[in-house]
Image (cartoon, rainbow over all chains, first blue to last red; front, side):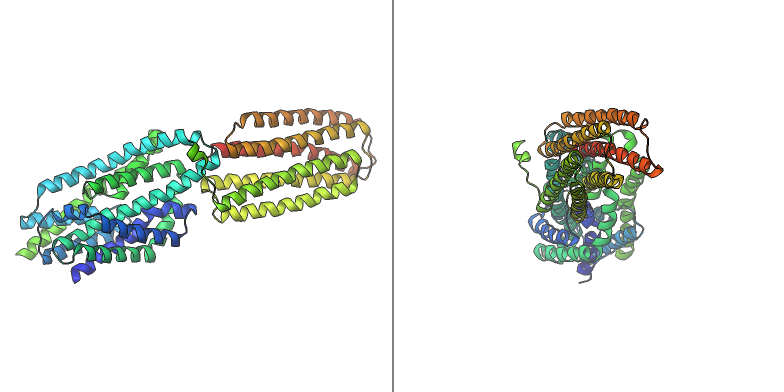
Length: 305
Length: 211
């Protein structure tokens, strides 16, 4: 029961933070009301969670862990995610969960390093893929928009902004939430269908109760980005995460979004990219899984002994 | 490409576009009524210009409410509102000019009047060009010809302004106030074309705002 509660806390936390990935820009722009964004989040996260099991299977296959160790893994992940949220550090829930699972898996000798290697490779390839895709999408759209009357171009961006938000919401259910629920499902604590429904409900609660504040911050921060750049970054992140979801790889929407923004920034000249911010994000990208790994490894060793 | 061109506007966006057309038509009407008033020296027609200014105020307020109620992406909203304000400024300036004329309470020198009528005629043409430019923005046709035409007409008015002043400095006035109001009347009349040019520039900015 405790494991399910901790998994729900993680799902709640994903809901409170990732609502902004999907609809921060749309709500900030006034394209959608927060209420409409919530309805779309609820629908498409649940759809993603119910229709895609590959990520859940991959994360569940990283290590064979018993119920007590799964609880430990979830607590370590939840603490990391909550602390990162409080300290406003760009930590992905995937990294905390996978770092913890690998730590516990190494401590118990059940870790499958081949699976881990493919996950790490996807963590490197996904932001790079989003970067390349953003450059392509931006270039194509820029050409298309230059040939359209400005009001039609505006409408096109408007509709595509909502569609890319829906795509990100779907990915949140199919990838981020699936990774958070994987330890509970693989340890047999909950059947996949129940886990998906409970996880989606918790994520929706997080989005409804705390998502508005984050959406407001992200929305106001990102609207300075011109709509074409913002949309290209978001769509490239959404498509990249979707592709990796079909491959069964847990990847972070936030990091793909960063890859997309850097791609658009590079198109506009290297000076447009805030190098210090990127350095900070990359350092957290390396540190977060290592920290989760160490904490989980040491606690598992202590628990097993 | 044809598919995207058919992309229809949302309901509020359509309403905003319609309000803009109505606003610009009000400017055209005000320019025409002003010209007629100047040609016929009809005080009642000058009062009609003031009524059209009030109609313009209402339209600007409606546009603002719809824009900040969520119509269009924020990247365009600011420029669209600035356009509404600028179009409204044209009407304000026409009203000021009409009031100056009513305050003058005297007949303009025939030569000066003739040049003022020429300025007012060019203002009418410019208000029509502005509507054409806005329609071109909507349909995606080239704006270049329209805005070049507006700029050329504005330069024509600048030349007329200098010629009017050349005449005016040789004219005796009975009091300081008569001279001041006369000078304000001429300044306001020629300034209408400057504001129409500003509105045309904003239409051009809108055209590249999402590029």
